[in-house]
Image 1 (cartoon, rainbow, N blue to C red):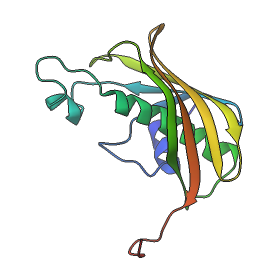
Image 2: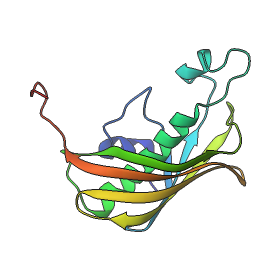
Image 3: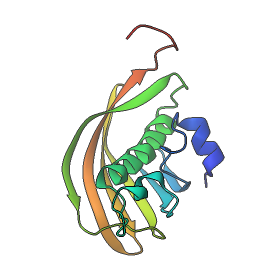
Image 4: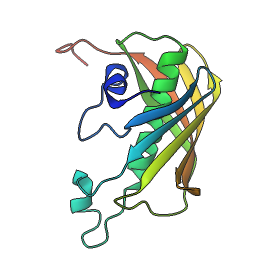
Length: 150
């Protein structure tokens, strides 16, 4: 439904921090399903962990958030000058490790959507196994112009 080129038009993230490769389903205002192909070439595998590479849980949460950001941006028809930032992460659970060669299926269901914030329930699967889940709270902000004081 959406390839990496369209994803890059919607998100500011780029390698090595773009953590979503494809969108399979999009139901505006409700749900999104995306994919992340986990490869041994990911830069974090060098140190996490040598001789036993597993995807860091925080990056699984980030990939969920990126899918959620696409859902929010498309649902609210937000312009490119809007960004989604974390407000909070609740009820995060990591159930199984994710290894190189796995394909992470990210399912995000919106539970609240406002013009300035959103909340979504995220689940990550490898094949049929639930590997992680969390409630993500996101805030919609204006992107500052380059060089603007912060």
